[in-house]
Image 1: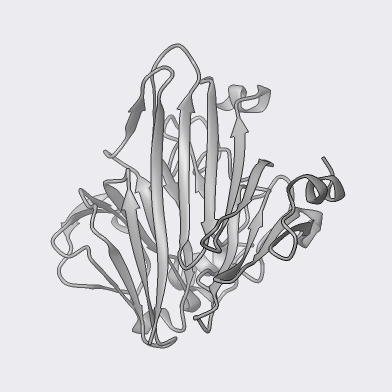
Image 2: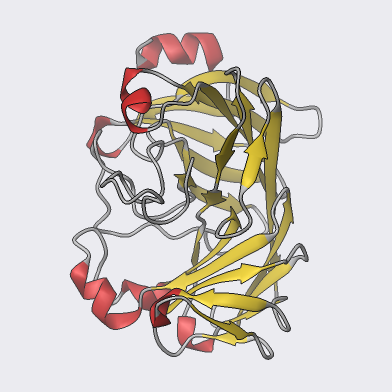
Length: 301
């Protein structure tokens, strides 16, 4: 359906509207009693979330991000699925899977009695996906915009045999200055260091960013916290269905090498990702579903 038809069918007066976003891509805009938010139908991707109690947006989107039908959007919360990271079979398929640059379907909207707004997006296997990954599937993303931003990614194996996936909610968080920020909650956990070709180490104390960071933390289910003194806030991340977490900042050289990322933007962001990555893979039986959940809350000082 076109944007006018989508608004007639699924718009919520004074709360949710579907409009034309950057590059002509459909954008869902929400403004309720708790927060404002924007969600791109392209990629099924939350791009903005700002509670009424907060001074700054939770999320970062690059000023050079691509808004094109065949490109992933650099920022917000991209969906990595059915693999996280490089093509596990080294066949030249896209990094982080194939749902970040496809158009999702807006399935449902709801104005909840508590003032929050619920959006349900979906995508499923087709000829394009079958050429990259042969498994039959249905994927749904439930987004709830309220006092917290909650995401539930549900994978349904609609085929007749089990399949295995890795996946991630690749959240880009906005920061005042990454050099002054810390990530808490991962001390004592082993991690795979992708910067040093996959060597393993154990985290000691909080994570401080003073160079490129690309780490997969293992066997972790605790709440994570990003302390951001430059913006006078902390971001709390709760997770379910995940036993790994990824922390990423490209730093100087990689920032300069990316066409959709500003040279100095590494200073204003960090990715702390809810994942099933590396050895934290998930096998889903025929007909079964798997639920990956995360919730983000801003504590403003």
